[in-house]
Length: 367
Image 1 (cartoon, rainbow, N blue to C red):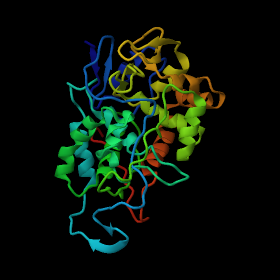
Image 2 (cartoon, rainbow, N blue to C red):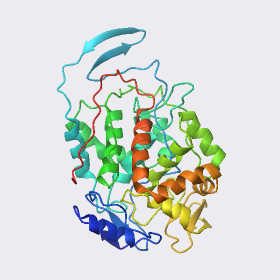
Image 3 (cartoon, one colour):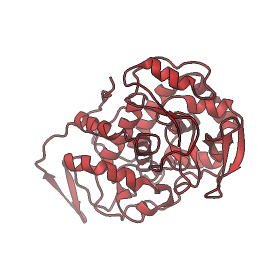
Image 4 (cartoon, rainbow, N blue to C red):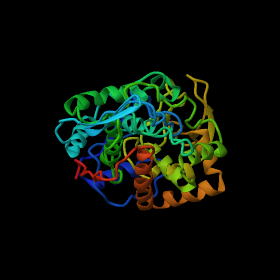
């Protein structure tokens, strides 16, 4: 069983101590608010639980046309007819929703002590099937609630995340599933030590799965840099944004029964830092076959508990991708700045905003 190092709620120095314990850290990160909880590990098998999944595995809804919507006050589409219907619902206090999500993050019986990483994965998968050409996909609709999307291989394990958020949905029934899931991802990043992510509501829930995007839109972790570009260019991201998005892998771990891969990307998988880039750039990675699945991945020569996916090693060896990896390995501040922008962009792909939505900058409960 892994041994865990707990970081104090409000002590930035303890955060530095945890990071200094990792295999490749050469300098303490810049001071900032310490996360509510963060666990590192030494060796051994982690608890069973949630998953972070394949390389930026993202799955979401389908086409914006031809399905039904409901929200607080908006057009309600019924077939070809559109009528204005104002639903008498109380305003949503989104900071209160954020706080409620923060309250459920810590779980000593779940993976490395937090469900935060799997909530980030849920937000990813509810956002990343967007196609900039056909304008389908994105976080609008939350169609992962329905088959066949709920059964897509890349969404293995995400039923756990959706179920964990159901009590909050019941407490705040006016919030859409799409807004709840993306807000949960924002909350998890911030509460685990990451940057402030701008967020705004406006996602509308589909009433059925007719608009699910086809399976296979997500990145294949076994492929190379060309495949990575093909998938993310389709969503409208450039090389720098792709590398910034990859930094979400500072959180969580892979599970053989979900993605086929096994292990975390760094030794403190519930702490959002730039350690992912330093590990990817600086460590010696050797190929290994996962015993339980037969999948090939790469592990740190000096700490085989830590892994990287084949697509990530291909990115490291790519001239253009490697420039950005080096930038973020050298500057956590720059990583945070760019991640905040691109994660916000990801979560808003395909969302039919009206233009008058308030943009929220949530105050972390650890502040």
